[in-house]
Image (cartoon, rainbow, N blue to C red; front, top):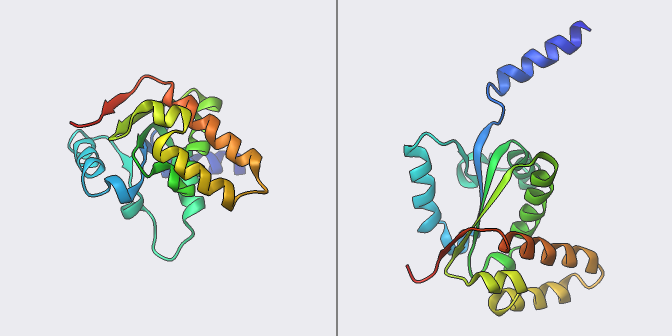
Length: 168
């Protein structure tokens, strides 16, 4: 019983709040890192909102996947920035899958932002999203279940109320 108590207190010391991060932002760096998401992260920081940022929080030389999955799990809210090339990244699609799994298990909120992409392209995998999935289908021929999950995840989040930032 003493070990359980000490384990709890070390957890409390490591995570003094219920969540370690207020917000986890999923985005395609190639599209938004040096414009929209830079401004978004700066605004969060000015407002005292603690966010996970992959280029500052990941230790060099360590595997990315476990760190990202832990950060997703330790976040209270998820912001998904859909951009033209979001669906070309298997990392982004895996992040989205994990975000939705965590959100469904815990009731956390997922907030979509459509940056220079029509929500219907994301919802129905048309345009650049359709092109990305044609390439994924060639690459992952043996894992049609994973591709179907990714398609359903994109549709699910694109059906949420969010922000459409095209031509702004």
